[in-house]
Amino acid sequence: MAEEIEPTPIRKTLELQCRKVQDREPLKTLANGLMIVRCKKHEPIDLANLSRKQVVLRTSKVFGSKFASDWNLVNYVEWIESRLEELGWTTATGPATDIQHFVSPIGIARGNAVHTIMLRSDGRFVHAYPDEDAYE
Amino acid sequence: MSDVIDVPLDSESPLVDPPIVDDLYLNADLDEYIITFIPDDCVSRNEKETVAIPHDSEDGRRVELRLSELSRILGTSVIRLFHAGGGDFGFFLSDGKQRHLSDPVGSSEASQEIYVQLQDLGMIAQIAFRQEQLLKHRTA
Image (tube, rainbow over the protein chains, first blue to last red):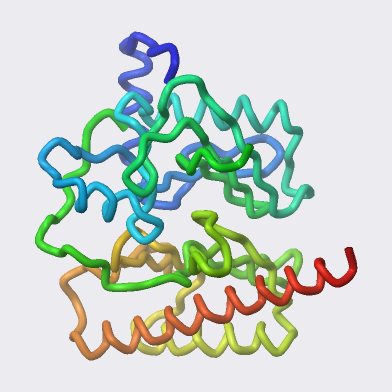
């Protein structure tokens, strides 16, 4: 994220609680019924010891694009919740997507550093993931 | 997410190819299957697309049949399934538990049968999406 938030003890506790949530289960259920879900396949991985070919594969559509390591689950939930408020999405909105561009890289997709986050709601479950910078 | 997840590096190629179901469940309020899927690049370069398939439609019955098959193979009712990355999939079961294809239970034959159903579901979603796009294009 552009501004890394110093993890306070409360945020550390929240992060630990988030990490107990199973894949695709709600990290937070909003008052309007939308559920922000965990999506493990887009979470950061250690790319340090991977070849270029392996990085491309592990951040492909099949393995899932990956957030940069500074995107912890607490930040992820807060960012999505804030964006949903701005967009005014509810369960009545139905399937919807939103694209946000960042100045700094937020993750890797198909082996490339990307600055774009795709927010996706299917009308009940909401998640976000790094996407290619090709939606200008 | 600052703690990294250990990923197996022994596999150089994925076990599955798009179209892949990313998330599928029946929205009982709308009586529709909501399917988010990973499309083939020739259909959409986007990482994911979403389609809604009415339960009481030809495609809906196809989806229901595959879900029934998955439930039969897994021995318990599947109410939602999702892609966990690479060749792994997760299943939400009616008893509230979650099972993964990568769990060390079940035979390789069962895994192969599950993959066949999952491939069919991915294809059903992609065809429905393509159909929707064509109709939009025609009416535009």
